[in-house]
Image (cartoon, rainbow, N blue to C red):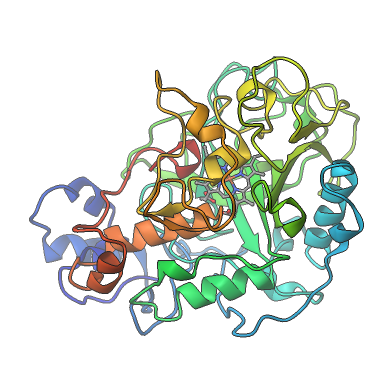
Length: 435
Ligand code: HEC
């Protein structure tokens, strides 16, 4: 898909690689747009305008491609219907392992196919609908066309396994179940005027994310047998700082991590959310196996253990004693293999708000504000609009505001008390605290 020529709005130029070089300059030429658009697509199709569907990806399929193509699942439900919540059989704080497995089984239902490349395609799921968040297809790290993968934090040597000597890029795609999709649909009911006041996720919302790495089995041995996807990524898989002009190509990635987040009122007095993560192959020295189901829980968290001194057991994180990762999060709180050890799942996600909060405690600053328990419905910073732990909502809104002309986003900017759109963080992946 590519943009129509609608004028000189930044949104119209977002598929033009040169656009990113021109960011910051006030003069953007129509040639840049036309060039990028023509280079990118044979059959222009309109998307991401107030009256059209959201775009699937940053770029259209490359010429001659006959593999999988990502289509954004965007027929968001307009009614909130009840669905099975198999995790409710378990108490998240006393049976976290069972709880997380039940949530994973729900995510797997109807999503696993013999053909690995065709797995986790919402169009093919006969059990239940899954939805993707819009506007993740923007900027240096935006969705590619094969599986809708966005670029995530780069893994530093030894973060994934003791044998790891290089930096490796990671990529991911996220899905929401129907209650989550319902909220996305409400916020974005008007594609030209998203309403950040409606960011409250209903009870039973489940979001899940598949994270893939470019790291090979030789450096991360527990990836042996991991499901592989092809995707259209920066070809230099070791480069931590690709540029918009860096060459892309079809690259093989391996499943490394599966993230799950569940809105559960049983922990409403803390955060309202249960976050858990799995690592493929059980991490270093994990048991042999293969395929999508060969993942082991790293842990579960339902609070940030505010005031924790750093010694003694955490009360609001459970770590699976059978999995020994080279690192988790700050002071042993839960974080995933690709994540920054100074943060935690709930610490980073609690900052989901508009205007965007600072995701990771800045170097040298007291980190304790990032390890409070922020109740669902409360913003991280007083006076902002909370987005209920959903960072894809935040990233999408931020991308929208930086992409469209300020005049076109005036209603949303005004509602957010923002005088101008946020500057787009080009280089840093959101999962690395990009905004
Ligand atoms: C440093 C920040 C950071 C940390 C730590 C982090 N995430 Fe996220 N996460 C993000 C961002 C940013 C997004 C949205 C953009 C994207 O998907 O790339 C996201 C997206 C997600 C999503 C998709 C739905 C949503 O809320 O946007 C899930 C589920 C998720 N993360 C779970 C987890 C889990 C589980 C952990 C811990 C194991 C974790 N995250 C740790 C930043 C973080």
